[in-house]
Length: 187
Image (cartoon, rainbow, N blue to C red; front, side, top):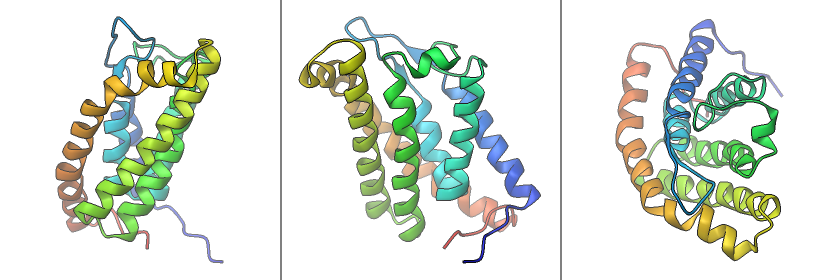
């Protein structure tokens, strides 16, 4: 199997999208009934996947995650460090990896077509929710249903809105970057 090399311009775009995630991720709104804040991290991941494709978009999220794990305050509420991964919201941070892979696969394999891409974002988000809910239940000593009520249900409308924003903006950004020969298709 031939390994695809990443060009310097693609590395730069991966870094730019990781930086976008670093800017959007800490911007969060705490909600009084949950330890899980409203965050823009998933919107940044959706956009990175649209702009860069599955492989490079997932890499940009991993760069963001590693920056946060070494202590750079890029996680929600301007926090960072390994403790965040082992805290109540750590399952969501890990779940974003699988969300990126699932969303990216759908977006790449269906050429950014709206309905299949949106279904991919939904499925990826559900997997992220599952990781996050299971970890939240464990960390906060909650039942799965109580963790679902605290860590998922209040976020569904906002996350759907973020998917719509990404589905509208993402293909346009990707198209313009392709016209400038800055991105290529992964298929």
